[in-house]
Image 1: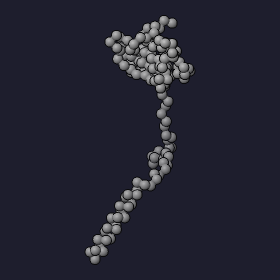
Image 2: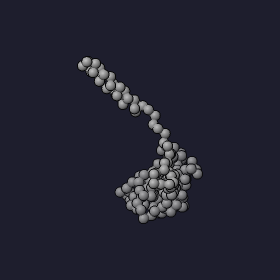
Image 3: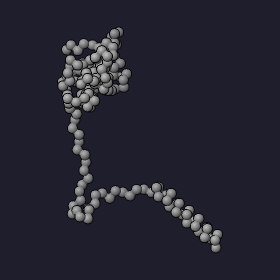
Image 4: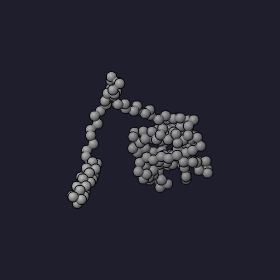
Length: 164
């Protein structure tokens, strides 16, 4: 009788293990949707988040807090003109409210008159640099917020005058 109880116990444990082990393999129950609460006479519809407003220039905030706006302006330039150059970005940033006197841009052409692999442009904003880069060598558009250089500017190397 002892061995028969031992066998029964082992079979019962094995069965329980199989049930527990396969419980995670079953498909989840479909979501039944909204239900009525016992005290509520009407079901409420699920809420969807309101669309966020497009970014805007916020001149009293930090460069980091204005990066989304900087990006939106520059991505609109790229969408309008896939071969955009430095002047396109500078003009768009000025039209968007950034201070032209605080901007820098690299040349669109190399010293041997070849198309530059990418163009960099920057705005010194609230003591930080909003920096953008666009071109085939940079795999599209990229941006960052960085501290200014020891020179007080944002871009390394020679930049072109923004005299238009």
